[in-house]
Length: 216
Ligand SMILES: *[C@@H]1O[C@H](CO)[C@@H](O)[C@H](O)[C@H]1NC(C)=O
Ligand SMILES: *[C@@H]1O[C@H](CO)[C@@H](O)[C@H](O)[C@H]1NC(C)=O
Ligand SMILES: *[C@@H]1O[C@H](CO)[C@@H](O)[C@H](O)[C@H]1NC(C)=O
Ligand SMILES: *[C@@H]1O[C@H](CO)[C@@H](O)[C@H](O)[C@H]1NC(C)=O
Image 1 (tube, protein in one colour):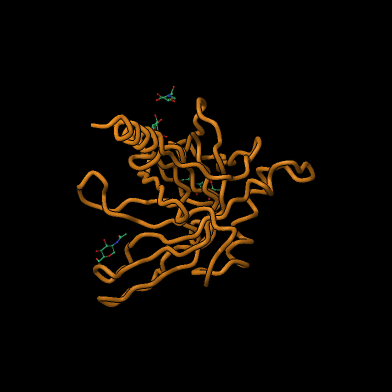
Image 2 (tube, helix red, strand yellow):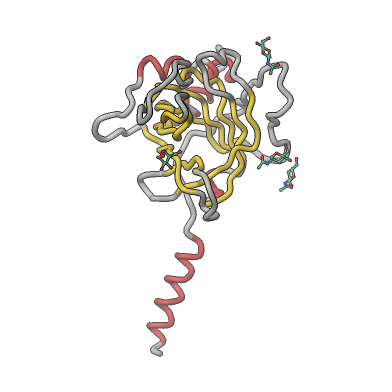
């Protein structure tokens, strides 16, 4: 093998081995989610740092099973909101963050049409990466193809649980852990399935928004 060929293979190996997800998202400073006072299941990791925080706007999908709606995954666009939170001191950052999902639900469309310059990540469900049953939440950077898949580590009913989907703690199980190894879905608005009985084959997509915090 020529020296040149060995050199090129070495370069290729190094590039492949070191390829990791990098995105220029705003650092979120000292912002942190404020969990409901009566919950004990969601725990901020003490030995991890906030990597970035986004507001997700999308839909909770449901299909009909035995005349009730059951979850059929989530689809959402996530927008970087770290820049709203850093460098301002007028409103405590965590309280400001908590007000963003309601604003997103009202002001951002889903799906959006055409290019979305502000888009940080796309959220959807994918088959179990371990090959078993079920589907799992995935967060994808459409620009690079890098993604992370997580599994729900803990769930707590939203304060407005009649209309808002639960708050979640998620743990990374597959993909690129440079996104974060622990994530939280908090401050949810909307997304709960209609309580009415459904017909076989019926589907519904319920608009929702939430904050997604990624810790690394
Ligand atoms: C937590 O507190 C809220 C508000 O007081 C209450 O509505 C809710 O039922 C409580 N949740 C649990 C799981 O105890
Ligand atoms: C962080 O703390 C958790 C428990 O709180 C522990 O399971 C984990 O191993 C720790 N990680 C590191 C990198 O120290
Ligand atoms: C949605 O329902 C279809 C049909 O039952 C199923 O194949 C698919 O895995 C479901 N997706 C999710 C994310 O649950
Ligand atoms: C999942 O939850 C367990 C116990 O509640 C905790 O020890 C662990 O650190 C959590 N994992 C992640 C990745 O947050």
